[in-house]
Length: 272
Image: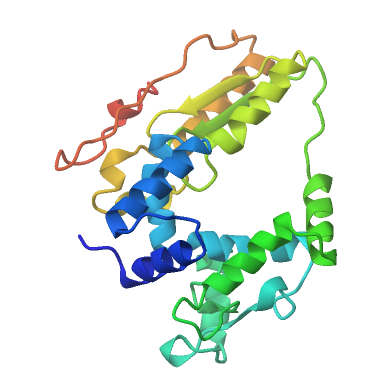
């Protein structure tokens, strides 16, 4: 269907600053797509990332992670963001005891959702959330005190090279549109191999980031759940370590259900 109005506004903002230069929405989309592909995005990840964009996950996750790296609480988040209980009409309010109790069982950990909203990081322009996104980008690219502290915190979390004889198994969905393999597991595996390690890299076809989203029509029938492959990897790694099983030489290749083809069947996972 038609693009969401907010996306058309964002296209105008990006065109005004020269990030995209095409004259029409379709041409701008094509230009942006080519930019992402040239930057390393793979097609399956891009397809899944459309849902992350639609749900505004990039802004929510960036604000939350930036706060974690900078060790800021909910009222002192960087770039003007803050978390607060969500009241009537989505405005900040007070949380009743039942809502607060449900945070422990139902919340995903990244607001907004489950009675908690993300506020701030906006202005009064026609594209109000762009200012917060720009500020978050500057935390990574800028030279201010917060930017330097954030990059130092990210560096502190970097994994050290594992010992030579440690069995390594990296499992990642090939269609992950939130943390694409091209920018995370693939360069990590390449780095391990460059240093003489021999990780088993299970880049699971058709698996993406959010198994909980597989119930969405038109999305779940293109993907398989990732969690069963995590369990399978743990079982096989255990068997290798403690039951003298051979290190796997072949990995299963799943098949997603196709649109209108019914339920996902066990055999499609190819784990038997």
